[in-house]
Amino acid sequence: MRAIPAFVARAAAMLALSLAAPLAGAGGPLAIRDNGQPYVWSTAAPIGYRTDNGPISASVSEASAQARVASMFAVWQGVPTSNIAFTRIGFISATGAFSDGDVSTAAEYTAVVNDCSAGNQSPIIYDVDGSLLVDLGFDETGVIGFAGPCAANATQFLSGRVVMNGLFQDGAAAPVQDLSATGFDAALIHEIGHFVGLGHSQINVNCLSPCGADDLAGLPTMFPFLVHDSQGQLAPDDIAWISRLYPQTSGGTTFANTHGTITGIVFFADGESHAQLVNVIARQVDTGGNQDRRIAASVVSGFKFRVFHGNPINDPGGDSAGTEAPGDIGLFEIPVPAGNYTLSVESIDEEFEDGSSVGADIRIPMPGTAPAPVGPITVVPGSVVPGNNITLIGTPPRFDQFEGP
Image 1 (cartoon, one colour):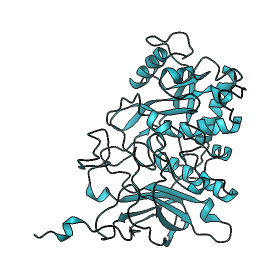
Image 2 (spheres, helix red, strand yellow):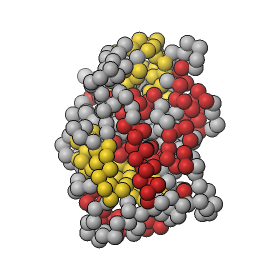
Image 3 (spheres, one colour):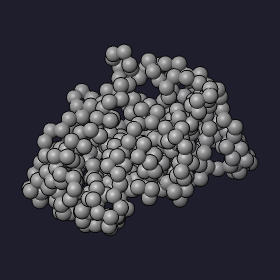
Image 4 (cartoon, rainbow, N blue to C red):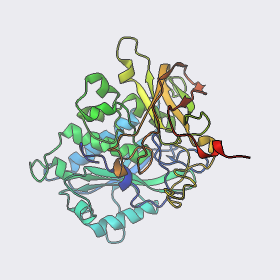
């Protein structure tokens, strides 16, 4: 993750993956299986993680680090409509070249991540002075941290890891200016979102420049860039997606009795061909309190479909996962709190590429022009509201409509 430069979590998350199937690009879930279902952790027991036996930085001790990490996992665990939970099970286990308790070199990192890739442990690694990131080939002055799954079986994540750059909390003005403690913690909360299987979300992209309180209230923690300390508090999009992946099904506050889902397809102008990698945002209808800016959720069209499937120019050659069902190419599904919504579409921002990507590791501008918002759409708890299709305006005609039989 980077501050206003970007969170680099998504690309870095793939460096050491040893998954049964590769990740698919998705604006919503981070990883999609071949059947279109997201990879998730088992919630039969709390997800166990291990922490580095060393300080985060010259000014943040191991004891303080341990407490802060626990508090940031607690942000996700505290969502009442989700049943995900975490527990610290000790310090990072010795493995291979790592035996001194504190991951501080590339060789130690490799040993620990290899063990993570074997599904044996989920480490939270502190880089006290940025030197580990340098050893790994990163710019230590731009990367706050990175995270993601390490291993999975056919259906579930088995392990994951988070790496934190202590340069941003070392109390010194050089070589980088410290983040506030709140901002640094917000960055880690974002990384834990990747750890549990969430991708990036693009909502209120105008907050790349200074924006108002209502826009910040709707700005996701999983937005690709850290632009404000308030991202340490989960936005409605974060809450909806963590609850969709890990729904609370018992008690008074469940996902089913608080949320519903809006579905549809994004089409090119012909109204037949599906358009993938278009950002779709559901915004609550404003009734005078700027709800449209504060309460919103999003996903990228075709988030379930194998990115660039069958395209000889851009096809990633087997590095992508997801379904091969043609009906999923432009499909979107957006979990939202019950209420009335409109749908709008937009291009993924030009800055969101590579580690800051939304939907895929490269960005494809939305073709044509966005139509007027669709809606209002009424969502009641537990409902799925289908058929909210969006047709782009002014896209070029397709070749096959001119072809004979």
